[in-house]
Image (cartoon, rainbow, N blue to C red; front, top):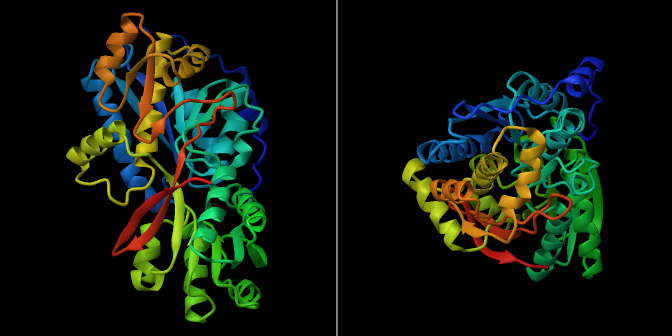
Length: 405
């Protein structure tokens, strides 16, 4: 999970010698790769995110299409593993000839696909949800972008929220993967700097049947809460369950990986009433309201569907960059992304596809503001973003505020 395997020689040959696809003739279908962790530890998050892909694709095709043809979402499953990500990305890039890639979702699968396939081939990759600080410093020749803030930021926010909730001593455990380890470090540094005490810190391996040994160490000095940075669909659920069964911890503090309805289903809301979580969120805005209305009209509700706005924004941005480039030439697509995402320009947002392509056709500059905030990419391909404070409320999670460090 944490280390990303090198591509095999055949993959390297494929990714480096493969010519960029010829520009699609106007009126042909245009493929955008959707590289998602459909199976694996975050499978529970995926169905509503796929609904966002459908929402964006339908809006594009009903509002004038893409380069005069239809947009087609070509889906690849990483299986939640680094090797699976490399295999799925290779197929999207070399066989499906996608013009851009949206994904992956987990940091480990995103980085694996980027290093082995996306960067060597030269294709724009926009992750809706990969939060690892390692993405910022990736030697990516400007091919890799994301629409969520880095965990270097979420870690600081979690530390501040924990202190603001009056929790002055915690034990910390985190999964040994590309997502949890850097986030735990960012939290730990910031929490100690604010005067908090970490009584014990344990890195744990994923997919273990039991964590009672680790929990005994973590609970030894009776801290007020357990900070747990992991995916609920992997080690997270087991750790919370065993901590409660053995009376070791009653209060849990987590991040987006733990903010999974699976946790409430298996543990019960009553057992989580004192727990709280941080997760990338969106500021209140006209664009957020518009997205909410569009998604709800098609898929009943946005409640408790994590990262749906980020997925929608990523698909629309990829398509806008292709439309702005005027072709599926991968370098032109990359070079057009900041032009449509960053100021200056005529403001466009969710639901504005038809308006956006009219403006592009008229030679006007556009500036996309997303469902989840402004999409202004810095020179590393990062956005500033905002982090929300969530608590368990009945069968779901309720946002009770935004946190700024």
